[in-house]
Image (cartoon, rainbow, N blue to C red; front, side, top):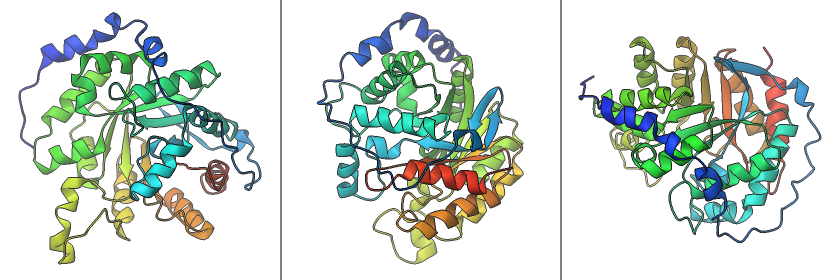
Length: 335
């Protein structure tokens, strides 16, 4: 991989940026500007799960449930088109985000992974809604670990970076699509530099990707990361551009091809550090029928290391996907 000159000066500046941001998160929580709708009752159709039965793993000092709550549905990232996106946005008011997170805690899920980017309207800046809802959840007694997925823009905007650190994330993770673009361009030094910024911020450090070979390369190079986030399906923009050569025709939208998870899970087993698999349900494409969901969970836990876990986004408007996911993790994820 080609190297670009690092920018240690900027990294040192960002390392100390949080000291000037005292009260930033509190200020953010006062400016949501949204009309909070009543909480929608989560369907009681999946029984109950004993939270003590939830299988656990560790990332360094942090105990992590092998099932991590994903946030894409909360912020309207359906990967299924505008209709489902709007349905998710309408459902996930601030109160509903908090209710679902607290429900997840009651099921034994102790970690939330979120990006800072929401598709809700009325944001004064990137990340406002996410930061606001996290504070409301904490004020409600929420105790989950926080894994924050970070784009280059999140770091380079001084205000956003300060407010990100004010959330006190337990881990910062380099965004997978961005890492994939650098990998495709054979220019990984900027990714390494951002990971150093994360380390300087005092958090755990994660590398996310959709390409198994990039994760294996990062491990071989001995990069200073604590864990990986590994997509079961290749959904990145750069890789989609290669599909016409493979399929002989250009796909219209995102594609999730059978057999692709075999490549990522094999890589997850090879790396020594823990990995959290995501898109294990192919961004909801395997969530339409109970047998498909069960098979996807079983496949995931049968094919990853004991130290690994899964990240699953949940949309419990019509079915209690939280309890369902927790029950399947208890069933298949015991070590």
